Each structure stands twice: as structure tokens, then as C-alpha cells.
Length: 514
Image 1 (cartoon, rainbow, N blue to C red):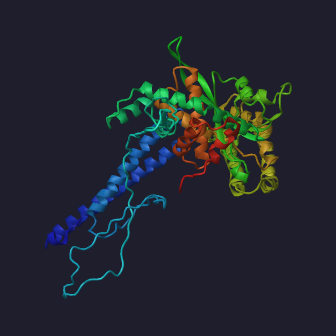
Image 2: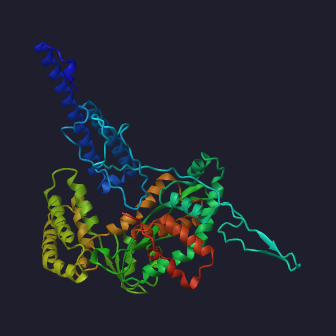
């Protein structure tokens, strides 16, 4: 910053100072531009199957560091600006908003002297109001329960005392609210139990990880009927999504890690205004075979939206015994294979395929939020002709591209699942892709990064129970901590199993704010 008080009277010196100041500004702008290009590159790399080979959290960490570096340069720039003057290039930043439900603590800052220079008293003519986000760190407390004993002075009929309140952990330390805090920290915030124990120890609370594990296991046992009711409710639907992902579990016999799988069964009818509340249920299975999907889906009949995993084929096999299930496949997976090819070089055919599928997505974006009938009519009028034309295009190039080439395999993939890809044209309730369930299954990857799920299959089953309820809370804008606190309390106090449907997350009365 050039300080007028320190400027030289020498013209040559002034020119040198100005050139130096301009050079500093150029260097700052160049640094910011380079960093912003890196941020854009990382965000671009975060999409598509290519990035799935890397650790998604490493992308997040890199973005955090880059954005922090940009903020540092902006801070330097603002420090060099004259006091009280806005920076000539204000940065675009989302400062967020402060929700109305948060408690407000007001502070009034008055001038030290309210006497005017003329001797008269100053009176308030207005005020400037600003708000900043403050935090009170999590604080543990002790609930002391006293139950006085009463006896009659006139007789010896015995002692009267109020019954002890019900507890999830008999004769244990935690309240149900504390247990809910541990569950949300582990399954929503992906904080392993040993780290939670370390955090508690900083407040002088000495608890072993095994003690916290005991709390979690007992909570999972109490919540199992609610989880079972959730799965039952989902399978009453006539349209669901399904996906699966790896779940590493220790094999106690071999002392090695084995791969189990979590199967996600999801419902989300909001894109077409359906009345059923969104929800997701995770089921643990020791393998990935289609047999597990078939067992999980017992009792379900309708449309199932899936990716191209071959294990799902048995669900619609002609000789299958069981309810009828119609598979709808995912255009995002078909597009992803073509996009991957375009990133390796100039491939006009793959580029045209991406463009054609992109046009279908553009139409879907315009139809989102309309009723099922309106979406179906729009697809029949606008998307169906594009799909028919794409089928001709696909047949044309499949005869001209080597079948074993990368492009040939991508085109063969689209052709193989063509009928299932076109199902969305026949029903306005169906989505064009399987992205809804893929989003619900992402927390598993985060938990997988931080720790193994369990030392045995039962631990993974506990994860499925608790994570299902937490993720369903999120889908319904319900605070998982408040829901689990209230639900555990009701279960411990004898909530009737015949009314277990009342404990579904979407029936919890308090919603999150904002």
C-alpha cells in the first residue's frame, strides 16, 4: 500500500514505487488465478468413474487447502487496502445466513461519551446491526436423580418411594440423550468410538472405547424393531432404488479382512410429487451375489431402479419364482463410460453420445417437480423421439467400431441394457438414473475411510440399523440427534410394538431449521 505521508518528492522514486506496487498486485492476481484454476481442476476431477479410483476425501482435503490459500491472499490484499475502504475487487463468497431459530445474545456498544461538543446531550437516531455466528463448545453434565423415601409416623405399613426411571443401560452412566450423541457422532459424523473417548477424556470423563461400544450395541438392539418397520414400509412401495457397496469386516477365524456388502433400498418420490416420505434402509449381507438382493426384496413388487450390476438380472429372469419386478437401468452409468473415453483424447463418436444423453438430462431438469402424468407426457413428446434416433445412431456405429475397443465396449454396454434404459419413457414416476440411491450410500464410504465397520458380521448389522434411521432422518429434514434421543427414550419407557410405525423418522414432529 502506498502511504501518502511517506511519498518521496522525487519523480523517479515515485515511478519506482508505483511500478513495485503494481507488480505486487499482478503477482497477487496471478497467484489467485492459479489457485482458482487448481480448485476448478480438482472439482472437475471429482466427477466420473475415473475419480473413484482415488480417495474422495483427498479431493476434499486438497480443495480445503487451496481455498484456504486463496483466503489468505485475499486477507493480505484487504490488509493492504486503505482502512475503511472496500477492496476494488470484492471476492465472491457464500457467507451463509444465520437461521432465525438460533438464540440471540445482544450486546449494545455505546460511545464512551454521550455529551456533544456543544455541551448538549446526544440522543439515539438509529443504529447499525450486525450478526456473527458464535459457539458454545459441547459440554457434558451430570443428571442427579434423587428419589426420597417416605414413611408414616403413625403406622408401620412400609416405605413409599417413586419408581426409578427407565434406563437403556441399567445401572449405567449414560442418559438416552448421551447415547444418541454417541450414535450420531459415529454414524452421521463418522467419528470412531476411540476418538470420541479421547474427546471425552479432555473433559475429565474417563471411558473406555469398549464401554461406548456396549452403549452402541444395546441401542442397536432397542432400535431394531424400528428398523424392521422401516424396511417393511419401503417394500410396500411400487417403485424403489437399489445399490450395493463394499463393507470391510474382520474375519475372526483368519484374522484377515473380508468383504461383506451393504445393500441400500431407497425411496424418493419427491421429484414427481409423490406422497410417500423418502427413506433408505441398509441391509448387510456377507456377499454381493444377486441371491442377497432377491432375499432383501422378498415381498416387493414393482419397478426397481438399479445400475448395471449383473447380480440384478435374476430379479427379472423369466423363470424366477416370486413377485414381478421390472428393472429400470441408469443413464448416468451409460454416459459415464462415454465420458471416460472423451477424456483420453479426440473421440467424436463418444462425444456425440455424451451430447445426446445430455439432451435427455436437459429435458429431465425441465420436467423435474411436475406430476407423474405431466412428466410422462413430456417424455413421450420430447425424449422418446431423441431416444429412437439414438437407437439408430447406436446401431450404425456398432457395426463400424471394433467390438473389443474401449469405444466398442461402451457402445455394447448401452445396447445390452437398452430396454431397461428406456423404461423411464413409460412411467412418469421413474427417474432417468440411479443417482438418488448412490447419494444415500455415500456415508458408507466415509465410514469405511475412518474405520472398519466391525470385527464380525453382527457389528455390520448394527451399522445397518442405526445408519438407516440416521440417513432417513436426513432425507426428511429431521435432526438425527433429536430423533434418536426421543425414540430411545420412548422405547425404554415401554412404547408398544403394535404402534412401532409411530416411530418412523418422518413422523418425528420437530424438523431441522433452515
